[in-house]
Length: 160
Image (cartoon, rainbow, N blue to C red; front, side, top):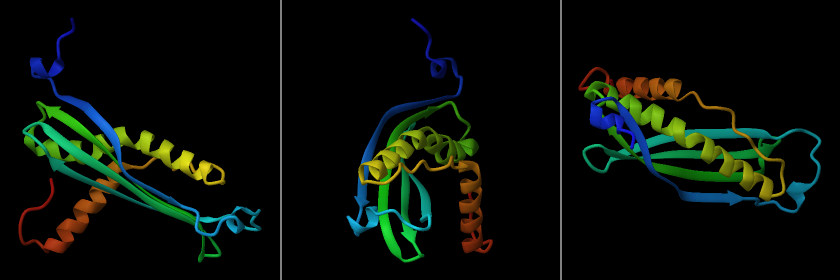
């Protein structure tokens, strides 16, 4: 029986569960939207990560992907919203590194599963599958940290 690294004091990140919390796919203009289009669609995507602490070492992390495809900037071909979540146990990580691990590494582990769900829903909706490009969660984390720091205008704590 192998030793658990967390029992030896080594840093550990374990996914205890992962699940689809909410999922919606819309094809509002079918069957007209399924006809061959003269131009390719414009794909819009928004990504959001939220987390909450469930216990001393357990965190629930929500990865939300919201997007649509439009022709000519206005006619919606399809739209989707997915919140894919996981429960993670994080042990032996220094407190100052905990927030980045939760907000970067956890969604990085969830992303391939969420990406596949979106691709299959778009395909099942009658379109070619939409394979979302990999997301740079480090850049997303830094962007959000800068936004929070800008809102605080130097009054109060900042994200580390």
